[in-house]
Image 1 (cartoon, rainbow, N blue to C red):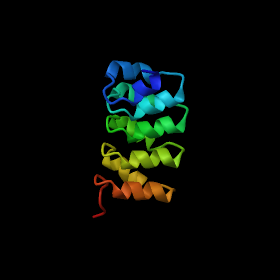
Image 2: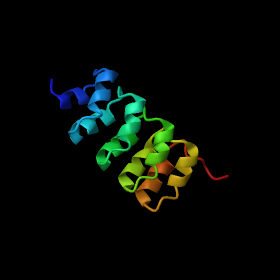
Image 3: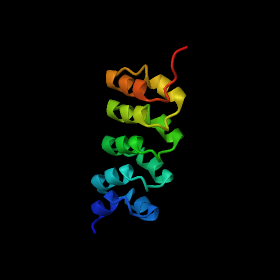
Image 4: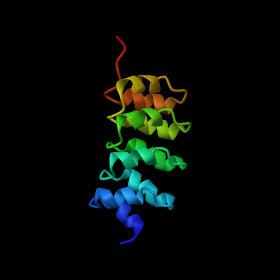
Length: 120
């Protein structure tokens, strides 16, 4: 099995995914960022990746720590912010900020998240 297939496989052990998260091939890192077995520490590192698609997949992963999602919500790319806005683990305060984002799609994603605080 090649590295890309390993990174995609939902049965790949966390230790292996932690190594794949450091791979030089960005496609391997993309799949590692989207794999639900990837450890939270590795997802936090992938959230700092230079390639926006890796950060976007980390923002979408439900194992990404809340503090990492807070940082991803500030990303310069609207696509990354929209994925953070859709993640159920993004803190309510961050979702409230994303609901005021300059990009309309990010605002829609935040509004659609059931954890977004409603105005009183």
